[in-house]
Image (cartoon, rainbow, N blue to C red):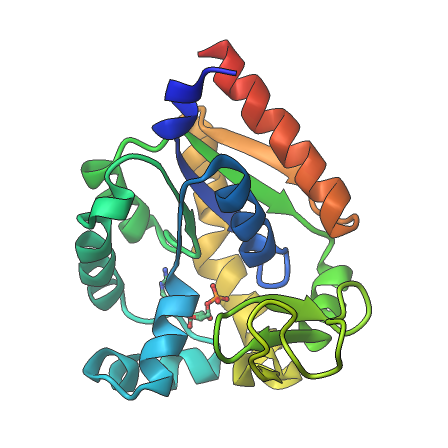
Length: 222
Ligand code: AMP
């Protein structure tokens, strides 16, 4: 494989809430040794530590709404100037609107956009069983990917919790928000010939295998 190409790879991962963006982005970042930027994770950390950004974002996140574009765009412009993002990265949870994608287009040359396609009936089941580590953000599922010790993160021994926005009322709102504001990005990136669709209905490992095959074949074709 062409190491140079991997070292410069700029990836976006798209998918409805519960599609497995965070889990797959973490695996991709580890395998290809690239930076992983999750806007949801950045916002949650800011909410927990009660920063100015966290206070502004909290009401939107807890209601399953999108944080306003100007806040997210400023945040991501700053993050993407960092040294770790100079070369290669995967963006997880950004962009989520056409306005965000338009700005991203101006500040970075994205190579591929992975769209994890999941049947809506599976999404709700996945979100209701999801547990996240309060310390490192690692993601588990009570049935399909449980931690070794109940309630404790395998990686850092942090405490696992259910995100407020993974509770059923907010999940429904997040799916509506996704359909209205984020789904149009599929056509946006498809028309730019950047879109690679992945069947996300299977287990984590099977979905990841397809992702790796498609990334590697993209790299070879360059
Ligand atoms: P996630 O962890 O990606 O599911 O994001 C959790 C929540 O953070 C979302 O439901 C939104 O409220 C907020 N959020 C994350 N990324 C963005 C974004 N790019 N634009 C607006 N809001 C966002």
